[in-house]
Amino acid sequence: MLKSELKAAIRERWEKSDRVYDHVEAHGVKDPEQIQIWRSILARLGTEPLNVLDVGTGTGFLALLLAEMGHRVTGIDWSAAMLQKARAKAEESNYQVDFIQGDTESLPFSDETFDVVVARHVLWTLTDPEKTLQEWVRVIKPEGWVLADISHRKQGEEDHHYPAEIGGQLPFNKNLDPAEVGNLFRRAGMVDIQIEDISAAGSHHGANYLISGHKPGMF
Image (cartoon, rainbow, N blue to C red):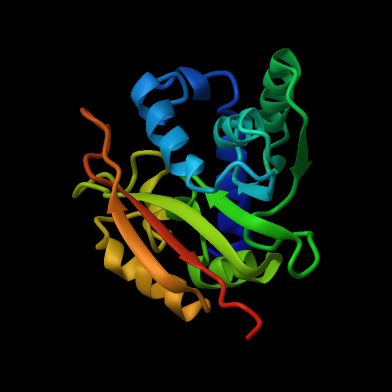
């Protein structure tokens, strides 16, 4: 399957997920433990308002938490249906979030626009993780951070979300050593790479890891 066909098939799948996404237990959108885990992670950013990009924002899980904490948030996703849900939730909560439809693997932003890039449940969906991480680093300022999670895929789970001919072509849709993702962060130009187990009790995919790193400063 050509890369363009692969991405089109993936996009079509997520366009059809808007009605059920928030109610699927594995997505953790309404799980108090998942919410607390991510609140604790995002609290590390401090109290000063930052420009944060939430890539693959979906229905706005991280974007809304960040807005609640007082940050200036942009959420990007290529599913118009998911973004409609995210905008509705932001309006209901009276949070100001700029939701944009676009490709998380080829961002429509200038260099060094954001202080932080965050990504939850995104890395495994990427068709070209190496190029994508380079894009994420491109749009953050010197000393800016990237925070992203990755879950283990148990043997035989590669077609859990997609048919095998699609899921089998996604480089991170497998039982992956998180150190491999950390190495990708390094190749993208990040330093101070950290890998943390952030698994929740009874997590759908078992172990879940936070991979983080920052862009070197100007000097």
